[in-house]
Length: 145
Image (cartoon, rainbow, N blue to C red; front, side):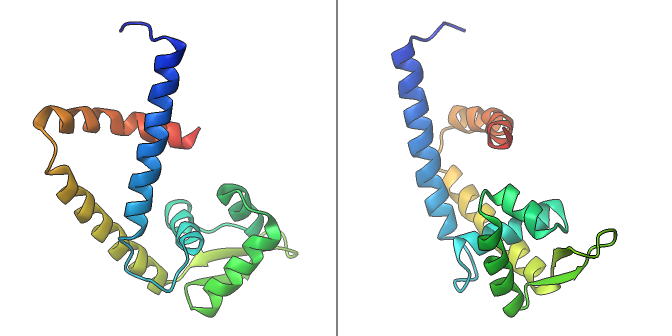
């Protein structure tokens, strides 16, 4: 692979950032439950991916302050989408888990977003689709760093 100049690297980073942000915004509009904020959906997504967690763990994963996470959990609990249970080892803490209605919302939301993205991808050339499939694991790794 040819070495890129600093300007080419910067241009690629700028293009990647802008494209990811636009695509993310468009994907957020594909949710099925309009009464949930993007942050609430993110917390439910984290619980779906990672399983039950303490409010502090959720705050760290979502990069929010613990008091903010406490408010988010309370709103989700009021909507019947999460439940708090005593921590199995530390009685001073609780663990938060998603309820069955939350799991259904996340499942249907994922299905709708996947279908929307698959439809969008039909507009790509075969070579572009192959490049995107090859880039998917790299983008996933980048999101985990």
